[in-house]
Every structure is written in structure tokens, then in C-alpha cells.
Image (cartoon, rainbow, N blue to C red; front, side):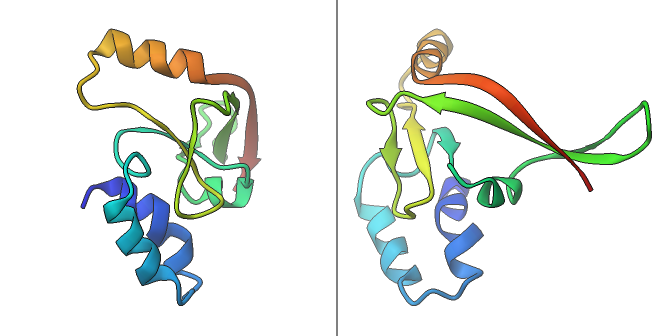
Length: 117
């Protein structure tokens, strides 16, 4: 299984010990375009902070987390098995130029959320 299945299922459902975890895992293996290559998003900042990078500022030496806020074209997104995750699926046969065009048509970044740890 690829790493995306971990994002879709493990990073929330398994930690909460929801009984539907195994059912969701089985569904993820049979339903197309809800895992794999693409851009994952969530409307929940708490979910997103579990997957974001941290960095240390060279100016003040403090550690921060950063989240990117974006708008997603609803026609381009697919809702994953977890209700709090969306995927803009990028087909594996697309070349880099086609991939970039797909992402640019589907996602519009508009803000950063910065949190000091």
C-alpha cells in the first residue's frame, strides 16, 4: 500500500479506534481515485496540522508549523473514505506539464496559517 492510504485512514481513524477502520481500509482498496497520487486537503486545521512540516526560524530561533489555505474547485475534488479528506487526483500517466495544469485548475492558494510551537 502506498503512503496515501496512511493519510486517508491511519492518521485519524486508527488513532480514535473507530470500529469502521477495517471497513474503510477495505473500501479504499476497491474504490478508484480515493487514494494515490494527488493533492490531499482537509477543511479541518486540526487534521492538517498532523501532516504539516515544522521549521525553525532563522530570525528568532523559534519553531513553527505552517498550513496552506486553499480553495478547491468542487468539480475537481473527490471525497475520500474519511469524510474530512478531499483528493484532487492526479493520474499517474500525466507528464509534469499536465500534472501542473491539473493542479493549477483545481487549487487556488490564498493564505498561510502560522503557529508557534
